[in-house]
Length: 288
Image 1 (cartoon, one colour):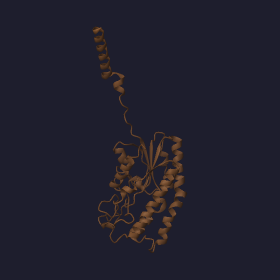
Image 2: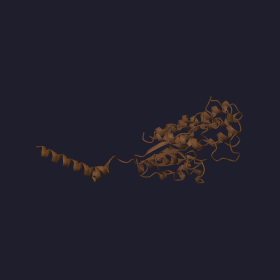
Image 3: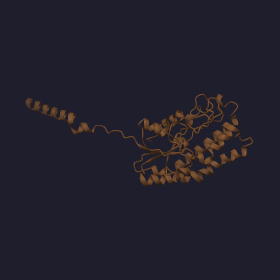
Image 4: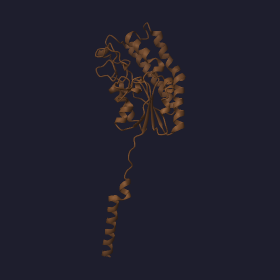
């Protein structure tokens, strides 16, 4: 009996050793992680405009600092396509064929566009160069911009998301669409106006800037819910990091202390810090 038991032990030991050394169990092991394939579409915020060098000068598309690129560098995603283009409206994103970059291999789509549809640049110029408060000389123009956000969403944002939904459903219904919001480059309403904007911005103007940013993001969230997209609420992470403070997540425009006197295409756009904030928020939402 003892001899038989010894033989069994020897046989089991040999089999176990063969599995460890070269058997199929050793080859299988735990499954290796494959980063999801990402397509990043949208406007200048998505393109990383201002973060030189550019991989595409016409689109002012960053070569290594946009949030989609940061996620790829961290190997959290594989950047399948990066057609985002500075200055693009929602209609431009469609016309440029950005949505067509979504394929059967795409796992995640990030989309950030709508700011150019609602005169982001116009309002910014008025606030920084003139008066955008609602009791100033440009009050009528500013109020019209604020009031026009919901109608612009119905006219432009709704069909834009519809096109994305159609494309995803046609090529890979399991792909997730992440709608990225806009951080406010100007101080939040009621917040202290930092050193760099003293004498340039007033509390009334920062209130307008907050209404504008909130108005855009509210419409993005509503449209995202309608099309079963995931809304990425990164805006709160930018509070206190506006262009007026010593630590800014945005490029300061010419005329502000510490800013370049040369025209900066990326003025009021996320710098490397801002793009890093977007990357961090997105990293936490890649799988849910």
